[in-house]
Amino acid sequence: MLVTWKAGLVVSAAVAMVAAMSTDAWGAGRVAVAAPVAAAAPVGGWAEPEADVSHHGHVSLWGSELGLWLHSENHGPSDLAGATVRLRFSAVLAGRQEMPVECLQADARTVLCRTGPLPADGSAGRQLALELRLAGRPKAVVVRIDTVWNGGATDRNLQNDQHQVSAFATGDEYVF
Figure 1 (cartoon, rainbow, N blue to C red):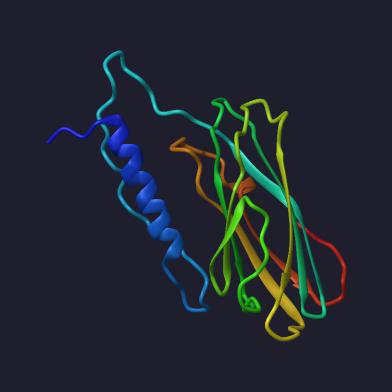
Figure 2: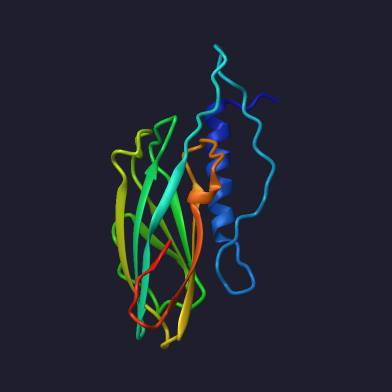
């Protein structure tokens, strides 16, 4: 069976979306480890692109409100047409939320956001700000941030795009 490069990317994107929708013990999505899709390289020996996506920012919790400010960038070596960031919360969101156009609420504890193009030199990082309402008034919320899809590129440095931060209901900024 011959799998074309384009078909391999479509299947990889579908696997990423299914993985984003799976659920773990506290209701947030979990990435399932799956074998990579074998894609035939186009004639000429095309190599898989490599990128270093990073996410940094801060989280604040006050009352039933959770604010998340995110800066995503790419340190190359390949440009990316975009990436998808998954934000998972230990607390349940209060119903459907009003989201920026780049984001969608996947379930009661998960939000997915696209970054848009990320050039390899890190010069044009993407900013995102979310103000979310929580069901109840938790004393603390754990937020997990990770890249669920990065345009099919390999990222060998996962230390700067996978974070877990606890935010206490003090209104303080907790940096990641």
